[in-house]
Each structure stands twice: as structure tokens, then as C-alpha cells.
Length: 145
Image 1 (spheres, helix red, strand yellow):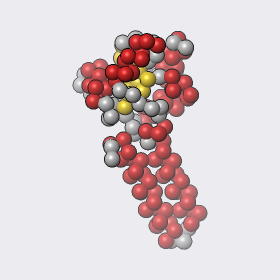
Image 2: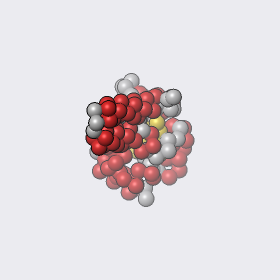
Image 3: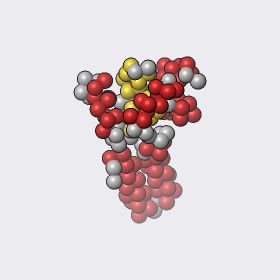
Image 4: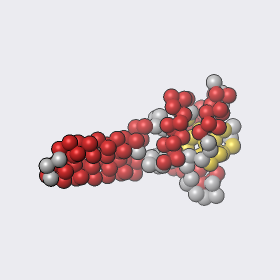
């Protein structure tokens, strides 16, 4: 199991325990509702919400060709999730690199952030921007449409 799935699995397990306790106490409706909330939280914090990640080298190569920004992210990051949700369907046009799966991506983020793995780090035209405003990222994406 990779680190990316630890939080979602823990959320589902905790939700199952809480739901079982509610069922045991005779509240099946409450149990179903709580389990649904935990499963939704697990889904939002899973890698499934994000577009498919590619390697840092591939993202840099593609960005050089099409000029689209590269987003370095990691599962469980609330700022990454905020960026992903605010970009909507346009997020699929960006090049996403999961720094937990790609050591070169993690190294690129550390180089841009004084040794810290601060995400999201968005690289536009070779210049890194740490935790930029989603509206600004959308603007950069529309420039390369």
C-alpha cells in the first residue's frame, strides 16, 4: 500500500467502526449516514479525485511542448484539493505530478521551496509558484488554450 491510500483507508475503517457502533446501538439510519460521510471523505482525499499523475520528467517535457502549467501535489493536501476543485474540468488540461510517487517531483518541489515539500507548487514557464490562487492558475491555463 502506498502512502497515498493510507488516509482514505483509515477514513473508511473509522467510518466502518462508527457505523457498526451505531448499528449495535439500534440506529441503522444514523449508521448509514455516518458511513456515507466517511466514504465521501475518503474519496475526496484519495488519488482518484485528481487527474492521472505523470512523472516530473514527462510533465516538464509536455509542458515545454504545449506551454501548460505543471502542478506538483500530494494526496491528502487540502490546498491541492482546493485547487483541483476550483479548477473544475480544466484541471485535466494541466500536468499533475504526485510527489509521493515520483522522487524527482519531490526533489523539484524541495528545490523550489527552500528544501520544503510545500504543495501545490505550480510551475508556469519554468517558474515555480507555491500555493497560488486557483483563479490565477485558471488564467494561466486559459492563456495556453
